[in-house]
Image (cartoon, rainbow over all chains, first blue to last red; front, side):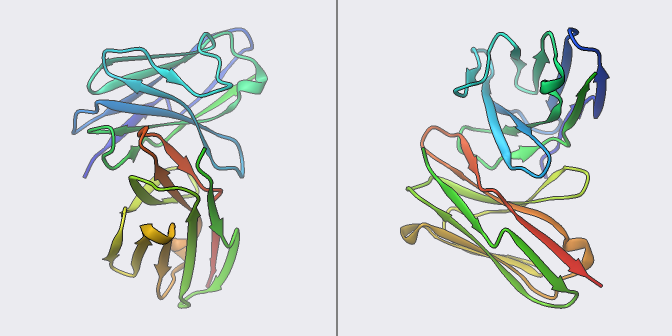
Length: 115
Length: 108
């Protein structure tokens, strides 16, 4: 199979601080990683597409200066929520693919609570 | 953008019953995946099925790409099948669009 990890699993931070979430593909190289956001009882909303060695592509309505994405290697992408506010509280999930159209594998998610 | 509709939104079954979940999409897609999201939020891959039929134990899926729909069959349901089932379709851009999901509750 293909395993994707995320760290941390949950985080509580104070308003105004920044939080970094890591997404790793453990047993395969991922040319593309995706970051999603999910609110309670809702579906997954794509935030951005992260390609190794290039800038992330953000979906309409997602602030790129607030949600910083870095895909530094073929096994690691990071999402940094800068100057977090309570409305940023959500479940953040990453996924990874070997190639652009290959099967997608998801991490276990990170639950962010901003107080 | 592409629209993905899943039905029914909610489904309650007695253990042992069979069910069919449907996913309709509004445009041509490169691939389609079915996922099960467990109570802890983890999405578990069920099927990668751009077309045709696949089976895995009590689960099977069929995608008819020309008619823009996919079906997920669950036979002899168990309480552990409870959760949310999502289908996700990919366009040429390589990005996935998710349906709103079907929430399945299997009662003992």
